Image (tube, rainbow, N blue to C red; front, side, top):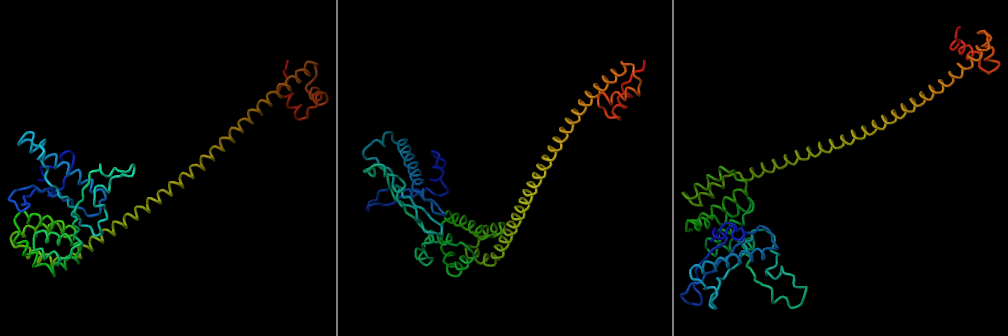
Length: 344
């Protein structure tokens, strides 16, 4: 039933999760429908009960629509019943399953007393793969037992132990399984190949030969693979990648340090330029002030020379006059007469 519910009402289902089976109940020859809902988890999901509720609501809603299409108004009758749904969590993780086992565990009823009776509730079954030993599973002698045994394999050591103790059992169960179950086994084996770092081409070739020679051939051929070498290669590649990452981080840190040094040098250069500009401005101001003062002094000298010349004094007499009357130094008096004396 999986394809029917895929993306139905916005809820996505994984492959092969929803099944419909016919069973005999209460010793009668009547049929009822049971829809097991199986969720695959590799680590604990504390919200799984709410996820299961969404799936169940979708299934019941669709069941009602289908029954109404066959017989209009049937769902309004007192005798109408929805099919039972068995929620099953198939858990492949190594840690214990610690999520709450009831939907009510996820609902907050602390706001007021007496709310529990208004809250929908159900429990679900957890099948924890690593809670079973291979010897226990072999006693079941069915397809599901082999599937769980394969899912228990996590590393090459688990694989070798499986070959040693359960290779013949796997060949027997696989040989008796119908074609649709064999497809499930091939999917599980492909996942196992990836987990154990089996090269892609070799894994594809093994699966192609699986139907021809059975699982016994598969395990015999896989036993020759140097899976540990593949794992070592993968580890070496990981170490090289980490070393490259460390070198890149070191280069990045050095570049950041160089950037900081450059910014510091630029700040110092900017400060020095600012100081130089300030000194230049002060020098220009001093020069301008000196020029203004010199201009005023020259005007005074010119006026004094003009007074002496107006008194009909000679050049030499004017020099003496500037010294004695106006207190000029000899050099300044000589310069003033030479600069500002006007010949008639």
